[in-house]
Length: 357
Ligand SMILES: [Fe+2]
Image (cartoon, rainbow, N blue to C red; front, top):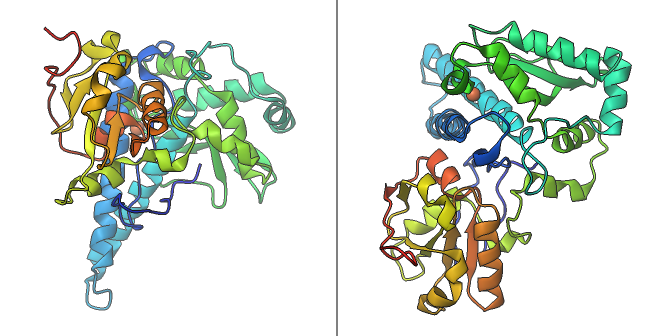
């Protein structure tokens, strides 16, 4: 759940420590329960990604500010926008992290909170059902407007609270959000039009209570270290050195020496219709045809492997390439995370794809 950077090692060039990195989607957008891939990916890339890009741009501006000479209205504006952007980033991450199935399985719609969290909801709301009624009613009351419905842990009050938030920067002081439900129109309009209540019910049928429970345990100081794995895309390489973030890859690609990574775009045949673009200079291949294309890869260059969202397709390939001695890393979050940081793309070229006609 750590949103900060990780340490760097050569020869890969990493993003600066000041950069707020995008977090990968943990849900599989193509098979959610009544929430479309188009809606989820648009929300992630444009609204969440836009907030990350805006936050980084504001912080870049703040880093160069002459504080003593800058007019107060400019300071006020920048600090207000920084708070809104940072809060939007964090709440969107909690929202997306809270959705999805378990492992490789779609959400069942029948998941319930884990025991510890269920007991806390019983203590503070007279039961899970009562909590759910209050939470969803609060969210539905925001229909036609905008804002967030938040379940948060308040250390000061000593209980979980359902909190209404009219904008991204509206939070009970000191409270830690456990679950955030996005009620801005961009979160549902593509699928539900103005039917915000139907959207709320569908979100509740997609909750990943395992991750929500882990976030609760983190808030109350009882998180287990192994729970960090819940916050990696399913199938992504477990070793940190086998992964590269979108920001790190962007920086590495800007280098002009011969250590610039080779780009490998992997896609299952069934997923080709989901693709429209790719990173410039990438070669596209079928993961199942690895024995046909692996020998073309240079052994003296780093290799960045990506798929759509950074789950098993790139994860398994990177594991195999590293087993064969290649310096390969999987792009965390795949091309979806690349889109979210505003990375450059070109139209899809399948001419190198095995079986392409
Ligand atoms: Fe949103």
